[in-house]
Image 1 (cartoon, rainbow, N blue to C red):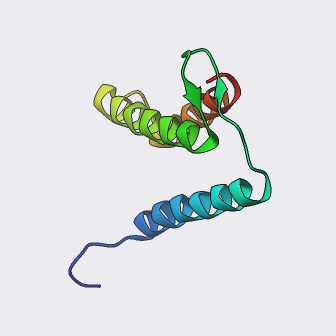
Image 2: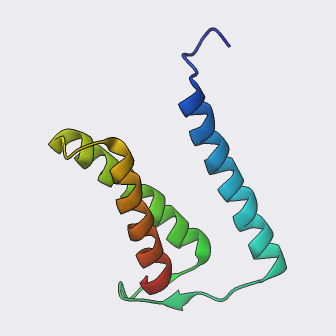
Length: 90
């Protein structure tokens, strides 16, 4: 693995993303769903809401870094609140 600078944080990040995808696959098999319409007025499934959450979280973290708003782990708390809101209302 010398071709890429893997760190523990990078490995944890990709491990968490892989775990989330496996968990969402399990949910889709165990509990099939129907799309629902939320505040965006578009039909979304669990996978759509996960994608919106991950994309929004990336932008939150980039903005946090760019604005130097404080320690980066506080951005994680903002992302968790954002993700809960997306899964609840979108």
